[in-house]
Image (cartoon, rainbow over all chains, first blue to last red; front, side, top):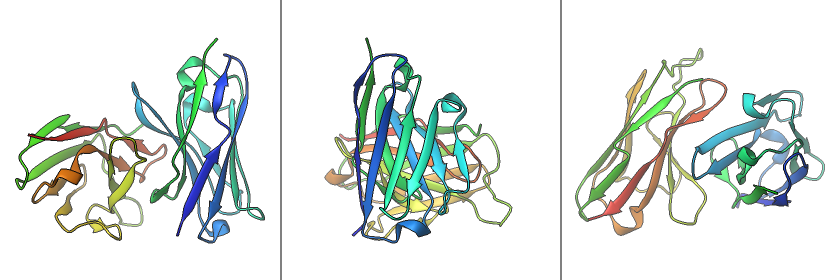
Length: 113
Length: 112
């Protein structure tokens, strides 16, 4: 069974940093594109970033370019999202997603002073 | 970015009756490989989104066949042939033909 478990969310001040992690199991992690998607009550669902199977290609939505970095560790079946220079509008539930078919339960990031 | 416009934004349906949700794209979703990467998701209250349909009309494993997807180019539809109580939630279309992948605003389904 595919399992994706996010961690690392929490409360952070504007301008701060946070690193999200996603532990994957139940499938061959190194054979799949992986993604981060976020959800806010106001803006709905937004695709944040994705990364190729071997980590050689990465794509970001414009609103996070230069601030967020997606990475992966295929040895440890883990996906990461390093978030710097956080803004109030980054407040959301962040989901780890395999392809577009399997979603984790999400981790809440709140950016507030 | 591709804009997906769903209608209606809310739907109140009697149990056992059909429901239909439209998703219109600001540009064609036909990829260079000939496939159309239009997906439908269901998000039940308090849960993560769950993919129901991919490539316009293909069922995800375990999805009841009362759900069906159709359409082409820029115009797509999700139909539920007979609404059940467990179908309550928000439905989203999503395209992954173009980067960035984008979602519709969501359609909230409730039981009348």
